[in-house]
Image (tube, rainbow, N blue to C red; front, top):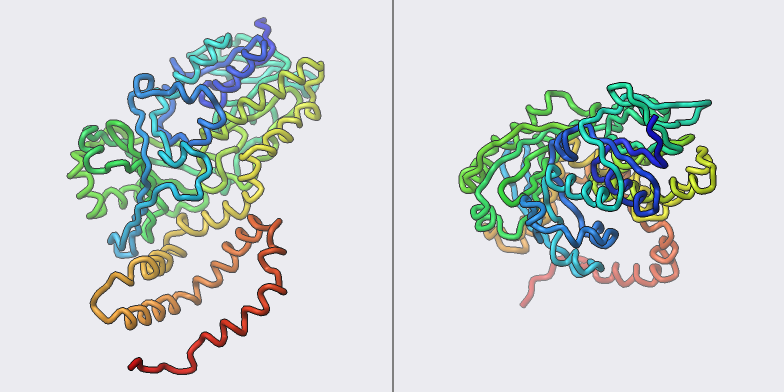
Length: 464
């Protein structure tokens, strides 16, 4: 029997950060990876957000020499595709003046392939003193009187520890065997297919410039993301399992067969390298994250962001928090569910907790907008483009164009207003719930109304 202070199942970002933290705290730690090396079984690249650099000093050591796929970008493009499959318009965005964290003004995401990033992060854990055991599949848990006491690998070898951290991804064996979760509900998990393309680095830099990612908003398919790396890019899309009415590849192929997209592939000299697919939990709020002798982190615990399901930051942060809580529990001799509930107390106080405070509202508006193409995007795309782009039309006098735009926007109100009332107002109310009394101060608003009414012309007067 192999004895440890802490066992971690999984060597992705959550598991590696948990292992690194635990080893630095003096715990005898082992973390298991089913692949020959961390990242080998992962099918995706990822965008690393600036919060990681603020939270973890080791991120400052990440360089293109260590992750050759690494590419930073300051710009994000949003394409809007109408129900006829035409690009109705696009908007480029960059960090705004309200961004408070300085590095986030220089770049939006740092994009890397997980096959490079995961081994780099795992090596930090090994250097800190954790033991990495790869090519090892953990198939069961050791339990005694309802307490998790260790793990069993596929060869029958047993490894004991007071606490086990499940960092084994969306289909978590630790979650299932511990009884914390038997399966995800259909509206809690997404399936995400994506194409990985090669493109010459000079073409990407010359044509895309500082663009790091793009979102394709469409009335023909669920929102599709495009992420650029040093020598290629991903094009993928996802949706909850209860939202698919056709094979997901049907919709992904709609993206890459757009006339505009084919032109982009041509000028980038892009060639498909791989078809990939993965599952991703996407919840309103994490639940059942810990039990007697066990904690779930990262995807295993359902921690991807409730708005866009970004998972690396919450994985690394919950992994680190879990090890700190485990170390305190082991030191006190109490690793019960009650003692490990400090894990929930801790992550709720972080920016992850702040995101999930509005988790239900963020989840609902995102699910109802870009991931409901036929129900919502058929009117949202033309409405949005009327607002953003209609004024640039020179076919009529500008005052007439403004009236035409206003008339067209008005025609969408029967569907837009119910959407705003159902999804937008609850989100705004939740975000500003502590400030609503100041924002809606009747004493300040009342004197303004007569003045506004006076400004409305009684009838049109021609200027002399």
